[in-house]
Length: 485
Image (tube, rainbow, N blue to C red):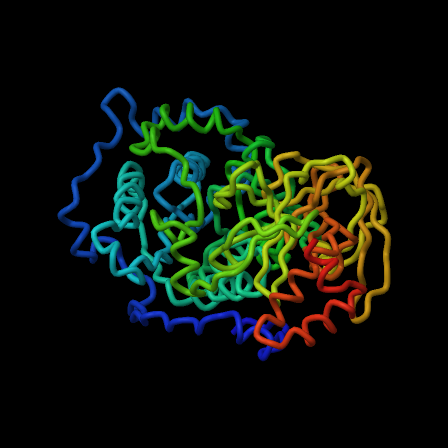
């Protein structure tokens, strides 16, 4: 079970429909099931493997040593468990490890629960993924196992995501999936199978200590491809997890991955990269949220004027900085604040205005990867979903009410910082630590006008008498007439 701070139930019970119970599905027994035992896959068409002009041994010989440097060829032969999704990246990771001389076993994690949506029975993308995975393994005679972790994924990732959106926060499913499922539940499931390492197709780099210094921590570093880098999705891994990992693509750029895929003749070499949240498939995220949280009509107000612009389906459908899906005329409009207790969403056309920029914010739950704070104070910081790349920062310790809070000073002004986004700190391309910003720790962001605040009060007291409304407005220094001018 997930441990999290319980918010005041009486406040939120007015605004959140009861979460429907998820339909239960039996866990496969045993947990690891041979691929060929799945009868539905026997009837699926097989992909052609390598052509006669490109044998597996010939392809391996054409791979330059620099492309194998993150596959630990100097330690061969290792026994490696490879997470294989059916996509290009994990498939090439498998082939590089095989070319490096390691003994590999591929594992496909079935975490997709589209069965939860009765209207999508005809579309089962996991079967297509599994077909590709099997075809890749057939090329080099690597065994493929299917691990059923649907329930674990629901309990440790999806339920947490639903709760976070219910309380107005924006979680990152990928960070949780890597920590709790791919390198958590899966790592536990194969703990008795004597694998030396676990590998995946992440664009990240792990530097392990040499055999003489095994007590030294392993280091997580940025990949060669800074555009595709996925280090921040691995930021919550523990040292015990990282010490068992290999990321063969950490030394390769995406363009080279495509070229090597053609050399190996991978059956999925032309397959597009996956987009969106992995467990939803083709289901829209808004449909998923509506199913599990519900809808509750609320107001959309302009932050500067308090003017009513329209209604929304529930604040949990929106995140700070969001532009799409508002459907308001005269834009572009951006979400700049949410009044969670009153289910009000504030928007503005001045999201990127100079006067809204900030140079500092406060963060909590700062985790240092080595277990202790770095001696240096000048670092680089990156936020998830931040296309601006890295920001030069310095850290300053502050005492919070219950925990240690750090103030982050940016070298340059930034527009409104994304609420509740994970932040990741680096020094010389080496990952140092991570944290995430909690709303109450943010310095002032977007100023909400007094008229807009008055509208919230009126909304909150809409069922009460006019005297109550006027007293509420007086409590914030306004009268009913002045607030609505």
